[in-house]
Image (tube, rainbow, N blue to C red; front, side, top):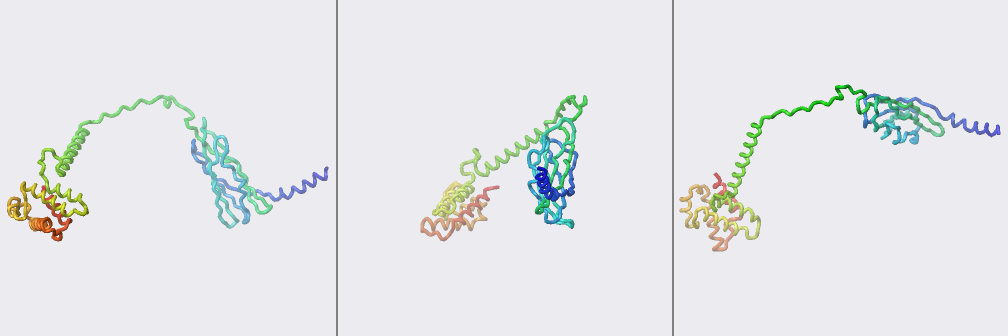
Length: 290
């Protein structure tokens, strides 16, 4: 029996001899934490080249203790003169409040690095942080006494009412302008702005197949409404004498009525185009607008 025990002891000696301890440094801010804060612990370990991290030696991400649990671990390596530098970032999160200020220990770390049968172990004692409670540890009489409600300051209403009044006036002016611009005022006569109305109708025709004759009919009716009588090519001289404001467009108007005669009586549509009719209607509508 003694020989068997001695044999087992000699067989286990290489395993113990292959494991060596190495130094590791831990960096952490140990004060200024409250419920929900994340505590970042940085651990630096330098091992000889050829040793690889045994990831099974890393702590589990959950179950770090009653007050703090491990959320994330990041690992980086860097080649230095003494070998390979391993940098670990452990993120611990506080999730439970305390009644008083006390140090909270983190988990102890046993980081292992392997190369064949050789094992290097970096052992770190649990780092501690100070965790503050949600409520102050002592309440004075002044702190426990409810504060008086702050009375709202009285604001003068005159500037507000004045600003509101000017806003309403500006809105009414804008509504009246657009109603006048688009011939929506009820007290205006039916044909107050025939050229503006004609220009909108011609623009709505777009590129229809019969857009040219329709646009010419619309603009001809607008001339009749504007003059309160039928306007023809023979009566243009009288029209210009009665409406001198149209004389700057005399050449375009004469061309339009000539094209009207040729289109409706001779079937010729080469004299004028639909864009030219629309342009003349737009110029006449601008003439109507003071």
